[in-house]
Amino acid sequence: MNKKRLFFKKTAALLLCAVLLLPCSACFNSPEAKNPGNDTGQITDSPHSETRNEAFNDYVNRLFTETVTTDTITLHSYMEHPSDFGIDNYEVTLGRYDLAALDNTSDITGKLTALKSFDRTTLSPKQQITYDELLIYLQNELEYSDLFLFQTSLCTTTGFHVQFPLILAEYTFEEEKDVKEYLALLEDSDGYFQSLADYEALRSRNGYFMEDALATQIAGECENFIESAGSPDSYLITTFDEKLDALTGISDADKSAYKTANQAAVTGHLIKGYRILTDGLKKLTGTNRYQGGLCNYPDGEKYFRYLLNHSLGWSKSVDEYNTLLDSYIRSNLLTMQTLMAKDSSLSSQFNNFSFSITEPAAVLTDLKTKIAADFPQGPDVSYDIKYITEALQDSVSPAMYFLPQLDNLNINSIYINPKGTRCSQLYPTLAHEGYPGHLYQTTYFADSDPDLIRYLIAPDGYVEGWATYCELFSYSYADTGNPLLNTLAQANYATILCLYAKCDLGINALGWTENDVASYIADFGFTDKNVAHEMYLSMVSNPGNYCKYVLGWIGFSELKKEARAQTGSAFSNPDFHKYILDMGSVPFDMLFDRLEDWCSVQSAQ
Image (tube, rainbow, N blue to C red):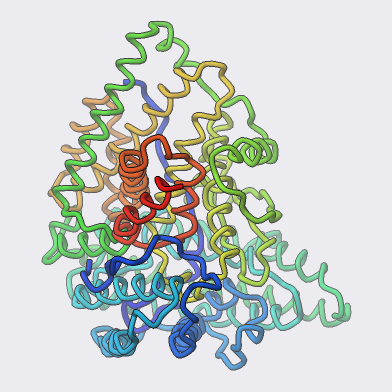
């Protein structure tokens, strides 16, 4: 499921958008890609815009096709009918690591050369967005191309081994070819996991393998899956049977044969693949040369900068991010102190703060109604709310959203983990995953008919930052009858988010130890050493993960501050949110570069 190296590593496992895992609350670029000057910030093609450059259109479409067909999970995750997108011939495969070509950068340089051959001024406004985003992406990949062995698909909570079973359970059956391809992928799974184990062995030989505690934990998660998947009532058996039974046009005899083939593939290939990976991890345990965060590895701090650039695309240094986090912590603590000084009863009220709507469907209905005053109208789509199977509840995120296929935008799935999500916090969680978060932003973006390549290079900092911004925004909708209490709860949660991002930054860029983490969060009321231990291991396992959520939210907050300052009384939430959503998922530098022109238009209206 991986190309030769880091380029376009947007695997199907990453099509899951998950909410952050946090403990219970405690109260207490490049010049070439910049806007040339005449762009007004309006990105929708109009009769007055330049004609779309068809050569550029062909180029980005070929680039999308080349990338999305690398593995069939990714292909099927994006489209049910590839032929409708001009994709007729593709190999049914999970892909493989090409260990002999991991350091080959010719794919990046070739794509950069081809991209730069286009005269940006001949492109339509929408195409210029694609050009700029693709240029930033490719240049960042090339700059850090020597760090390819830092990359791994194995991490706790969000690793491929955790997400793959969910992806299989969500694999849609619209016609018989889907069933055949699904079975072919299952039969290919042991080969893929062998490739993954071989890649981890290569990382080990070069000193990049994970430390023992993480290898042991991930191996344990794999063993838990093996145990659950091998039972006759395994959800990979039952979900397959249910989806197959719902298909028409297939004889009962053929359905029976497919069910038998699925059982054989699960036990003979998928479980075998997980055993291969488990055995590989156990053999490599003890080979780790470095301990702690990325900055303890040679060039590790550089790789952490790559992760920040890749997910955020915001021209800030680690020190600047660190300072920004400190300022947001101080600001939110001051807000909390000011509110409680104004109303001394808020402290006791906060201890009982909760969102009264706790039924998922009712929460989403309420959110869809309330966001109408603050966000532009998006397309009307359907969605399903599902629950994580018990076998995976201990290892996956509290909630997640599956991106819909481009030709099936009405099939949206939000998964809730009963063990990871308290009923009283379901409201902001579904604001993150549903409205106005992932589901709303994703379908709004799809409705704008963007160049398809943008789906593959969408910065995670925009995607998760927007959802986190929406999660915090939803506190204003809490029906407590006390806006000050809502603001207090919002500031408290924002502080906690910043603490997590501070620890992520501290561990992976500043050399913090587990004791440093424990000491830091203790100053804010978190004295449980187990919390510090879990935070530390999580951030060592998945560096930069919390930063993309939190710094992404802060990016939108900073953008909002500038928009307010420049537009004054002309500022409105719906217009500001429309600016962000119309741009689509882009690096933050692009959002800031175009903001002044957009503000000028707003002020003149």
